[in-house]
Image (cartoon, rainbow, N blue to C red):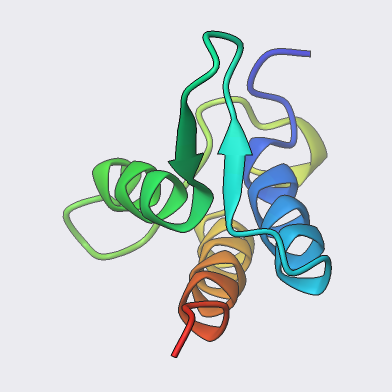
Length: 85
């Protein structure tokens, strides 16, 4: 599958982890990571100079920066909303 639908996956994953009240994910090596930090950092590294996001793999319209930016903003919204108080 590769990068096909990657940004849709990111926003769906963020919604699911928030809904399940999951704060950390366990890695194969036994370490745990805060998914919010990891996802937030990853998304910020993928942001384009004009502030948008786009998938180089255009499957499922993910070459459309408007759609992909919307997916990314929804994922970041979940990251922010799920930060413990």
